[in-house]
Amino acid sequence: MSTPLASAAPATRTQLHRLLDAGRAHAATYRGALSNHLPMAQQALLELGATAERLQAWTEAHEVHLEPSCGARPAAILLARDLGRPDADASWRAHFAQRITVLGPSAALREGLGLLMPGAGAIAFHGLIRTAHAVLAAHEGELAAGLAHWASHFMPLPSAPGPSAVPLGAGVAALLQLPPPTSSVGGLIAERMQAWAAAPGFADAVAQLPATPDTLRELALLAARTYAATGNFTVLHLLTASHAMTVLEPWWPEADLPRGFVVAAAASLLASRAQPAWVLDQPPCRPWPTLLSAACAQDDPHVIKLVHAAWRLGRRWPDPAWRRAAERAVPV
Image 1 (tube, rainbow, N blue to C red):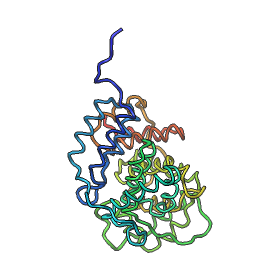
Image 2 (image 1 turned 180 degrees about the vertical axis):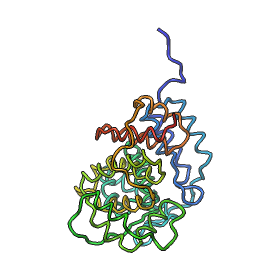
Image 3 (image 1 turned 90 degrees about the horizontal axis):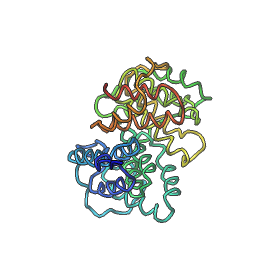
Image 4 (image 1 turned 135 degrees about the vertical axis):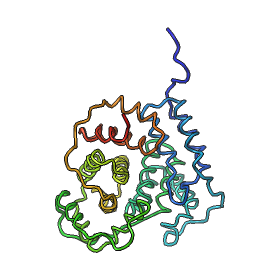
């Protein structure tokens, strides 16, 4: 019986943890306000079935774009001062590391989500998404880093006390009737989300959207179908954020879908300028094993994360939309 080549050995949790430990040398953002996707994609590659050689090679190719972490000694956190302050990332990381030590990771995560869910859309959902990948990686240092990324870019969006919820389709239709914001809607995703959230009528319209656990499935499917039809980059982030919410569901601060996520989802749909797709554009044709293998060969962390999210969502809520979204992301 022949021995498999060492290069074909699968990546392991031990290897991932070693890479996440090394990743502490990198800042949470680069080139101003772009999120460091390294730890998120590393975890996704492991779960998608990448080889150890591929995980190492992808890491080395991607980390050259990153910036070193600030070595300044972190100060104690003051919520009123430091929530939403990007330069406080190191302090937040120390804060959450300390809470994990005192409370344990599960209780610290629940406490952190109670603080952070009102700003679920922070830095284009990347704080939320990085936190969820940290949970899947079962790595306490990365959990502290994900929560810190979220806290340092905290971005609550307005929602008025509203009437009884309408069906999601009707609520989204009402949102689409809003006049565009008077401020610029160019720039980064988070900036466009903020501009739409400040537009007249947004807070009242978004208050009518439902916020139940079933709403998360509906929003995720809407994102998958819309991405499949359009390939829209902002909608991609809503899909991976919806997956992140399913990962974090056991630690939600309340039984229903946190309102902060619903508001951020609405703002991201408007910011995308994509026409929502309520039905699938066409059936998928490539099987999951082919898509997972193709995703592992991709250089773009967004593609890796989307296929990972769609695959996991498909196991939770079977539907052809997930596979079709993954097909849109991965070239033939």
